Image (tube, rainbow, N blue to C red; front, side, top):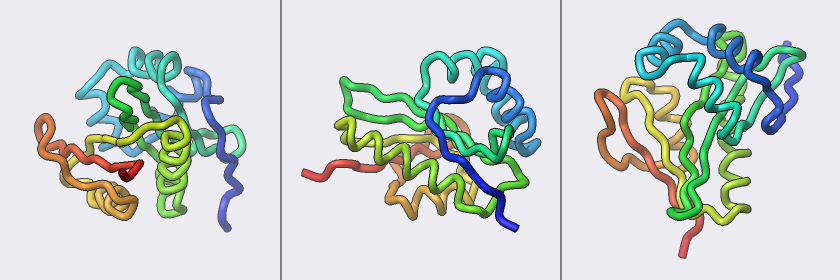
Length: 151
């Protein structure tokens, strides 16, 4: 049976964000912890990021975090994560869609993100949304970009 999901914007507190990350796939969590201190990252997301959230009852099932940079008219997606119990339900795609719709309304011209080069599911998701490779990032990460507003 498909869970009932409630999509929200910026409602999760720091406790819910931390619980979400701790419940994520072990590989995702290990990679996140290798790049940043988890508590500081959660505080930063809560204070500064635009957050698109998928809730299943009291559980934060999916999260997309992004930052809009007005000077470059770019929205940078810094995190997309979905709990394993909710994989393959289209949650990441819906969160991405909500983020990109808002970015277009806000006049952003470009979207950018970095993704692990071996994360085939994420690469397929971003490719289907129109993101194109924009070169290597740090380590095994790949930088991708999308033009939101066409001239």
